Amino acid sequence: MKIAQPALTSAIVGLYAAVASAQNALQAGPDATDNAAALAPNADDAGRELAQSCATTLLWHPQYSAGWADGYCRQTKDCNSPAYSTELACCKGSYGPQSSNACLKRLPNPPTTSPTGAGGLDVFYPDYNRPWAAGLCINTRPLPNGRPTYTSMLACCKGAYGGQMSGNCLASLPSPPTTSPTGSGGLDYWYPDYETEWASAACKNTRPTPFNPGDRPTYSTLLDCCKKAYAGQMSGACLASLPSPPTTSPTSSGGLDYWYADYESDWAGAACKNTRPIPFNRGDRPEYPTLLACCKKEYAGQMSGACLASLPSPPTTSPTSSGGLDYWYADYESDWAGAACKNTR
Image (cartoon, rainbow, N blue to C red):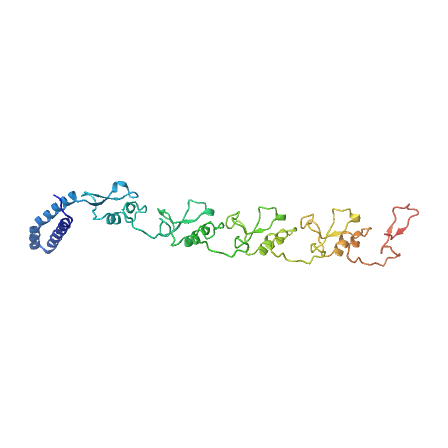
C-alpha cells in the first residue's frame, strides 16, 4: 500500500507524541504510568505505519557508499538513512561541508555562489607546494589541513609572502599594487652586483634577485649602495651608473684626488700620476695629496728633474752656479785625480 507524504508526516507526529506521553507518565508516577500503558498501542501502530512508509515512499537519501568527497543524494526507498523531501535539502543536511560540492553539482539547477575566485573558496591560503620564491596564494578546493587562511589574496600575500624578493605573489594579483621603485620597473631598494667583477660592477635593483632575503645588504638609493658597497672602487663604475654622477674636483682634470709614483716607467725619466685606472691595489703604493709632495718624496734625487718639470708651475731655484742645481755632487765619471764636484743638470 502506498502512503502519501501527509500520511507519513502524520504517522511520525503520532509516534513522537506517544513517546513523549510515555516519558511524562514515567516522571509523573504510577497513575500516569497506567495512562501511558493505555497509549502504548497507539505508539506501536504509529511505528508500524512509519516502517511501512519508509519502505514504500520515494524520498531523497544520502549515498554513503560513494564516500564523503563523492557522496550524493538519490531518490529511493530506504529505512536505514535520513530521508529528505528534496534533493537540495538532502545535500544541505547530509553533505553541508562537502568541499568538492559533488552532491550540489548533481542538482538539475545547482545553487550559484559568489566565491572570491571562480569555483574556489571564499578564503585564500599560501601554496606551499611551490618554491618560496615562486610562491603565491590560491583559493582552490579542498583546503589543506593546518594551512593559514586570509580573507583576500592581497592579505595572504602580505601575511605569507611579506619578504618575497621576487614579488611573485603580488604580481599574481588581478590588479597588482603599483609602487614607485627607484629604477623603472625595478625594486624599491638597491643591492651590489656580486655576480660581476668588483672593479667594473655596480648596484642593481632588477628582478628577480639572485639571492635570498638577508643574504646580501640592500640600500634605499643607488648612491648609498655605491658609497657603501663600492667605496674603494678605482674605476668609478658604480658611481658612473648614477643618472647624474657626482662631480669631483681632482688635482688634475679627469684624474684622481691623490698622486702616486709611476713605478712602471724608468725612474730617471718618471714622474707622479693621478690617472685612472690605477695599476695597483689601494694600500700597495704610497699616495700623496699633491703632485709636488709626490715628486719630493718619490723623486727627490732625480737628476733629470722629470717629475718636478711635470708640475703646472715648476718651482724656481737659486743654484750656486747659473743654471745649476742647489747642491753639489762628486764627479765619479771623471778620473779621480783630475775630478771635481759638480752641480750641473
